Image 1: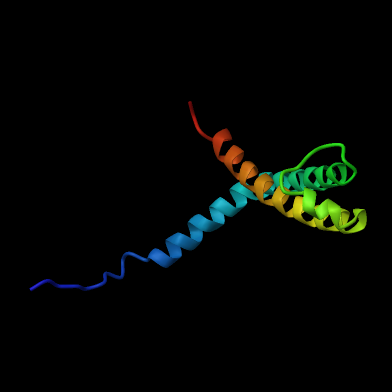
Image 2 (image 1 turned 90 degrees about the vertical axis):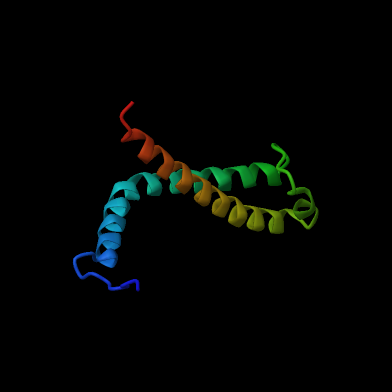
Length: 101
């Protein structure tokens, strides 16, 4: 017969919370900087694509609706995509800076 007792000396929930707090404080600053940088560059790319200075894939049908709609939709989508990519890159580089090669 197998004994399936849970031992009180192992507290997985507390360990998980402590490690998440350490990771949060470790990546907070670089993720914030990365997301701000990505958001600003996404908004700038949307403005440039609206007025035809750069080409973004899939942005053509939005431009045909009109400049005002394209500018507002492009700013929102560009900022959101920039925030996501900037946050991911900020997290990756914060971990890369602490690796010992």
